[in-house]
Every structure is written in structure tokens, then in C-alpha cells.
Length: 124
Image (tube, rainbow, N blue to C red; front, top):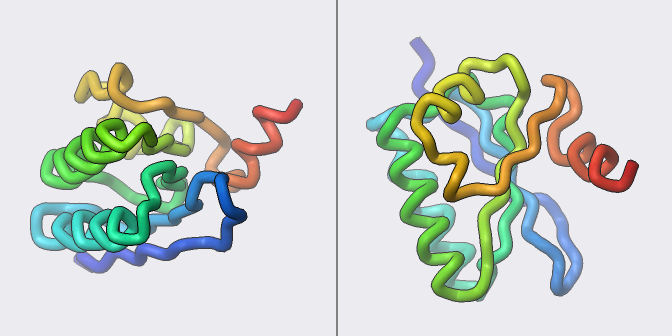
């Protein structure tokens, strides 16, 4: 089983949310990579973050804990993490079971759309 995750930051304009893509399986062994990545964004005073999880196979409870801690930090700084999930994915299924939808703004898209698709759906 491959336990690697890939976290990448896309380009963004001043005043707009920072686009982030996370792919792979988020589990207890690699969830701290997400915390370190968010900390690097916070160090740059980025507290508005759009996270694309459409290429994420699954997120464990340890991973959701890191997202929740990061969301708290963002909100303390007048920001927010918004999530993009593939509808009908294992990640979306687990997210809905956790009850975390009250803490995050979530856009559900078809698997191939990602953040770009979410932006198009919002504009349409």
C-alpha cells in the first residue's frame, strides 16, 4: 500500500484564497505533513485556503483532525479553509460521516473537476 501524499500550492492573486491540492491517502503516518504545510502558509499570513481533495483516496481521522486544527487557526485570523470534494468518493463519504460539514464550506464536484470545476460551478 502506498502511503505517500502529494501536497501542492497553486498560484494565486493577492487577496484571493490560496489553492492547495492534496492527493493520495491521508493517514496517521503522513497527516503531520498536512499540519506542517498549513503552518508554512500561516507563517506567510495566508488564512484563506481552498483545498482540493478530489485526488485524495481517503482521509483518516488523524487527517481530519489536522484540517480541523488548521480551520480553527484560519478562523482565529478572519480566514477559512474551503474544501472541494468529489461527490460519491470515499473521501466525501467519510467526511459526511464525521459531521464536520458544520465547520467547513464544502463544494462537491464530479471527480475530474477539482477546484477549477468548483469555481465554474459557483460562477454558473
